[in-house]
Image 1: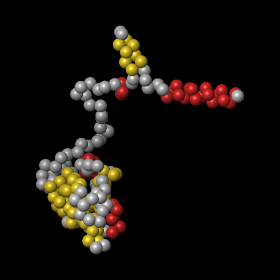
Image 2: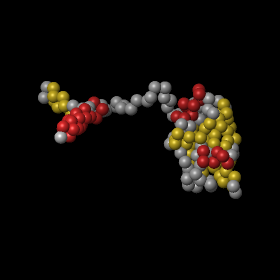
Image 3: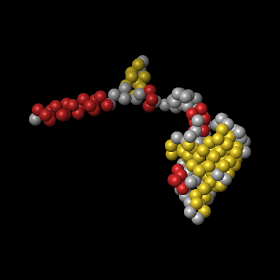
Image 4: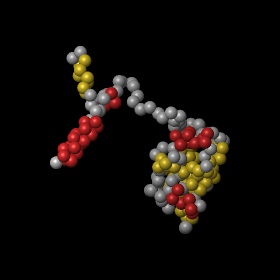
Length: 170
């Protein structure tokens, strides 16, 4: 009996401690219910803050190049596998056959990683784009703001089968 009473008391204290989010503030006849985060934001104010050191995605301002993702026989490959673009261009990766495919960059220099990652929409992980499952499905990466250099990429599901390439940004 004593144990049940202690358990009931401990449970009530736990529920009370967890319920501290809603506060009622009665000042000069006004009543506000809820925490500041639950109240509606002021018009024009932003409620999301970017993490410290975060980089914003930059839209492409140049030409869009196409790289096809294909399976020919038992060979998985990017066509072309090696491509040169100008800073500000974009690459449209198109799933042609042999799905699933994605684009994941490897060995990216630390000073280029943040911008390249920010320019990759719908990622499954850092520097790894979403899986393309259906023919003609596309994934576009902007190289705006990405420093000049050579960037290695792979298709994660087919890395062991040699599906890799390079982007040289001028």
